[in-house]
Length: 189
Image 1 (cartoon, one colour):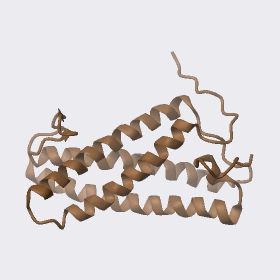
Image 2 (cartoon, one colour; image 1 turned 120 degrees about the vertical axis):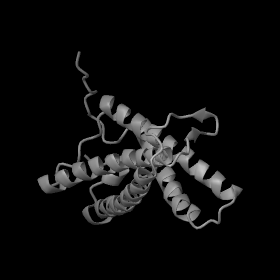
Image 3 (tube, one colour; image 1 turned 180 degrees about the vertical axis):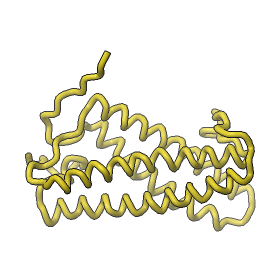
Image 4 (cartoon, helix red, strand yellow; image 1 turned 30 degrees about the vertical axis):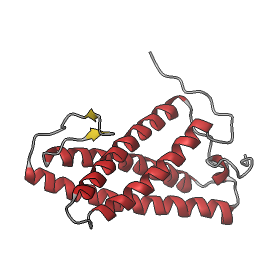
């Protein structure tokens, strides 16, 4: 049995895809901000609670990314503007692939890191998630570095993603940004 995506004859992402995009953007912003802030807190019950919230949000982001990928499987995105060069198309597709890799890799490395350091991840404080690896301090320290590296890579990729969107909006004026927003009018074909 094969999966046949819905043909694309629209100029915008579906409302579900747009909603997931902006929820993921908000979650990423909060996660990166909290992630950098929590490291500076002195050891206290507050710090432990903030770490717990960070893990909840990370697992929630992972769920949103999986939902977005599943949605995309059955609801293909609108076509890129006809005037985009093959290089620009390749960069757009490659950039999105790297973003998805990082948005999956960061929560997974966080979960793996917690497991390796002996701290179970409990989603929303009620659903204990299984440890992905046994307690292993050296592995935990390695995963800290991978998690940090992935976060810097994500910040770079999101910055490039935003710059590309602004280029399309203000230089190319090709309506590309309208495909993912709720209020900027109709996208150009």
